[in-house]
Amino acid sequence: MNRLLDLLPAFPGKRIVVLGDLILDEYIIGGPSRVSREAPIVILEFNRRTVLPGGGTAPASNIQSLGAQAIQVGVIGADKAGDELRAALAARRVDTRGLVVDPGRPTILKSRIVAEGPGRLQQQIARVDTLDRRPIAGDVENAVIATLERELPHADALLISDYQSGTVSPAVVDAARRVAARTGALITVDAQGDFAKFHGVTIFRCNDREAESALHTELRGEEAFADGLRRLRAELSTQGVVVTRGGEGMSVLDRYDHYHHIPVSNSSEVFDVTGAGDTVIAVLTLALTAGAGLLDAARLANYGAGIVVQKLGNVPLNPLELRARLLQSAE
Image: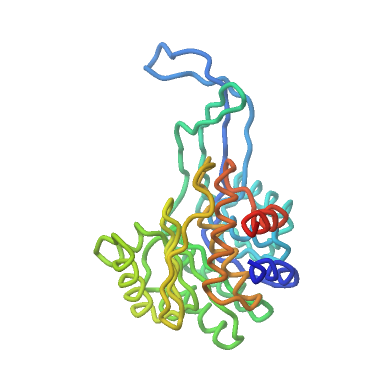
């Protein structure tokens, strides 16, 4: 446990470029009042609206909260959601100079309708997504690549968060690999699909369902997970693989072919799993740049994920809470 605690003071001063699909998470919160006459649904009376940076911005928010400097790279639209997302990132002190505006596509907006009952108990009842999944191209793609070429030489790592919404194109990944190879920066990836384009990155993360889809096989039991992670590592030619498994924790395979299963650090107070994977990849990346091995980095990330699932939405991990959880676990 002391090894994990010793990593935290090393986070300030690290510079992490975060590339990904930039999403604004919107929460429209209301209290149930009556049943509608138009349809068999409950009417919510509006209480308030909140917005949070989500998607590929969530790892950047976590990195900034943990004391490092996050440089956000990605695409937004020329719209209200884009302005709100830029402002929300700036409020969290994330460097937004890498945002590229594409007037031809909307900022990705995920609108959640949330019912709030007595004691502020909240339940999400619907979600509406506004997005354009077409891959970026032309001037927009060139601008993203130019931003990576400008920022990555001054960074300790590149974190790629691919929500398969068009930003992380093969050409962008190829350019990132070229720059990282020249500068020595780590590349960590959190992907939901299209794994092949990430061949040769340093560390790769996905969840168990995504791994099963890529491997075309079910993963049941530790032997199956160990074999599956070895296949992923070989196919991607990466140094390490982390597969998160929801309530069953995570599986880790490092560069030395050591497989580990890490149980969840919190199974009794899960409120909202939104952002858990984003927290994992952010903490993993910072821990690796601080000199941790993959197993210790994954253990620290596991504690971080156990904290954020207790909160509604993509709330950045608080370093004081992380430290307190580590100290509590050491007792």
